[in-house]
Length: 203
Image 1 (cartoon, one colour):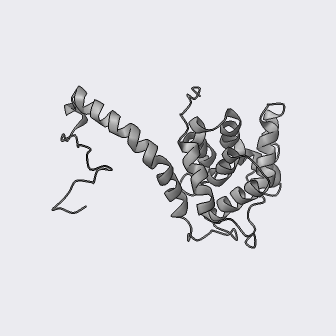
Image 2 (cartoon, helix red, strand yellow):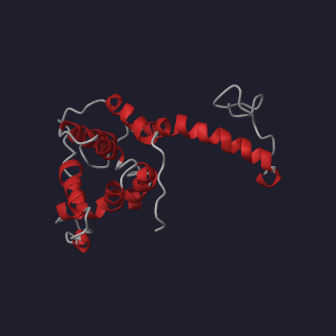
Image 3 (tube, rainbow, N blue to C red):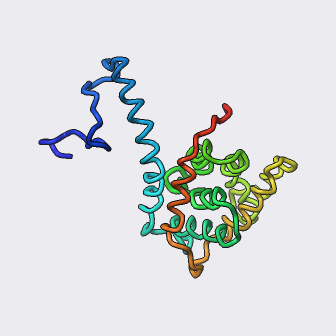
């Protein structure tokens, strides 16, 4: 974009802009145009932009872990793939920490909000709580509570959350582990985000 051509490009050449500068000026037909184009835009762009969020961090530095967040996510997904987990679980492993740096104090909720309407209740529940489940593996962390997860003992998804953290999260920080490339997972991510979104219960 430059001053000579200040409009952002449209995704498709046959699409149209709404040539208004405030939302208050949008007519009903303007909104319908946007809604029609938005549905197609999301279907074609959502997964690509999620993958770009992750791929852009490939060469980021780390604050002390021996792998950066990108390699942690790839390792998590690769472990799940090699264990024979289903495609949804593999994608959840890939994206569980996509907000770890940009939304550190609530990155589980970030991932749950991102993926929730495309994955099972089991994975949505796990994503929301996986950071607290990790405390059980950090007994010497000065700010952790190793018993934090105990409040959910007996919940139908407790064992999956515990297994996820044990096998695919806290153990996915090995700098010598040979990960599959991101391209291995891209078609899986595309398929998950192409699912019809399900309604999520209000919190």
